[in-house]
Length: 413
Image (cartoon, rainbow, N blue to C red):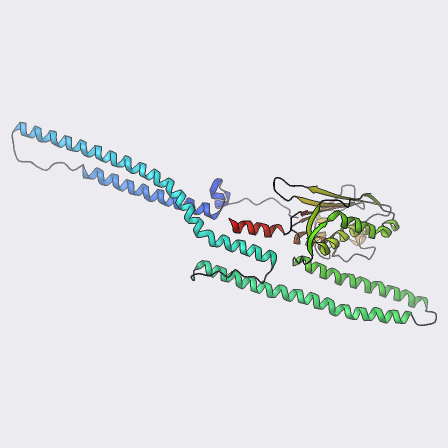
């Protein structure tokens, strides 16, 4: 969540109309302005030359009779009048041609700007598609070595470095989790063997063994959370497909019926299994729903309540719309400024939210990562009466994330 006043745009971004739109509109405006300025200067030069051409007075003439001088003066007056008429017609015709060419220059500038910027639009669409699908693809722009190709090669180099970095991080998380789980399994097996020995065990030994097993289970859960968080942050939707979010919520509530009953909680609303369908990763979305429900159960007052609802937005026109999972729970009054930090890993609101010992500090951060991987949003709100409201909004795309669909539409333009 962002706080503070919105930034005021400056420069061309603050202008209304076409100048605020795209680089193509700005280039068109600059081209038309340059043409208008050069055309105005050309008309001014033509007017000055035309006026000077007809402003020269006649040079001294030889002496002649009065009738001859009058005839010459009349001819000069007619010649000057014809020159003025011709200059006026020339200026009017030039102004009309200038107006027509001004309109043509706008269209021509729009076309030329589009042709110049077309490689950049294609690169932008390709980069969005690569980011959405996989990092192993490249732009691979051909043609002569110019500024556009240099930019494309730079982006390809950046994608290669990102791919190596992401792959190294992915391998590190996977290998570290695997290597840590092996000694954990060995420790758990050794503990089971020690407890299975014949003969009575001291009470302190049994208590210590129970605590060790709980600790091992907690570490195992933490490692699994790390893996889920890494997958969600990298946008890995390997098992993506059509699913019903309401069904996942019903399964999560049914699987935690004993925990809900043990804490005396009341589920005020239960979504129907026939809720609107959506597209996404079943594994990640199941974990997201489980974490939201677990958060409402663990961080709640005894004999409290849980409100669960699924809201569907059909969208306008041909839009896919969205679907929201809203989970509310009772509890103490929380500070909204600190609630916004719960989406970050290992952020907690004091000891009261970890008194049960079941929290790893990754629950809501995993929810935020899964929502972002599906082009969704997570909204956390402190309820005025106490407790927390968690709302996850996801797009009901037909088969691919929205950023991929946007990239394909941009390419088709």
